[in-house]
Image (tube, one colour):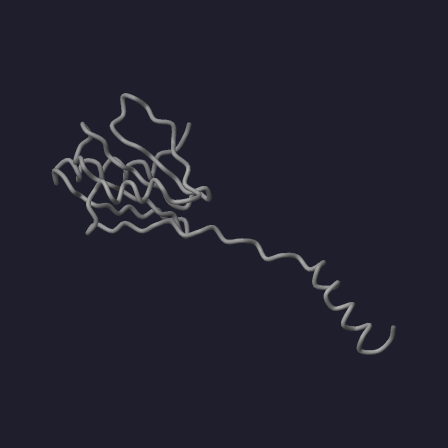
Length: 125
């Protein structure tokens, strides 16, 4: 084969060897404080590519992080300060931003926010 017909057979083969673009991680769900606590907690926990942290029975929280580590969620359980509350931390450009939905006691929510903010500067020794 020669000419245009041979070229039509070569082009698809050349494309088959090209590197495939890397898949980007799906974006973490943003908080929507207009949703009820239970509905939002279920929506967050059900999203794909979310890894739950082992649950400590003495801790009244559930922690989840995206596989890429760019977002983490804290969902309170009964007995937690500010319960019910949902917090989200996102990492970008070397900064960690904490946001949340305070459904319960405002004082407890502020205590929870201060706790999460203190973790930003924590380092392992």
